[in-house]
Length: 248
Image (cartoon, rainbow, N blue to C red; front, side):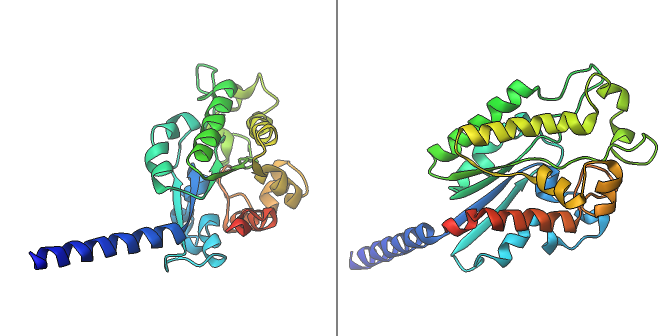
């Protein structure tokens, strides 16, 4: 009997210790698409440590129980796709801080002339993420998507994969994408959410939003809609400037 009581006491102590360790851990989740995952890193032979999510590890103490940084980016996803895994990949992590960056895939116009996710639904999804993160006790941070390089349709840039004619009713694909960023900005402003405006910061760094300026800046890779390590560093520096990591 004493043997079983001793075992039970030991298990209780272990449970209490684990609970104490968990409460001290600071959890960050980066939730987004390929520009969060860094899906182009392998094919471009970029260093994994240069992803913007991984650069945060140089700022916070990790792997020692103090901080956990989880990359929940999935290439090709829209806000609608990501809702299906939001609870599993984000809320179940019990996050303290959640970076949310979508829009690049939501804004893609399909052959039927409609976007993958229309702007009204895009806004609904962002509001859902913000509300649920806060309800779970975390702090959401919204991020705008990158300024794309359109190209001419024959140079492996954006219009090579997404024909220019589909954006004829818009002011070009780049400005169409930025209209989704305007929604992200609006949601952030009206709901008192910290905003990391990647689009604005990258255009400022490039000295303009033309194809030439963006390519010459070195922050956008040859696909036209993914970042380079230099672009990732710019996002990381913007995060530092926002001071959201200081809340730890």
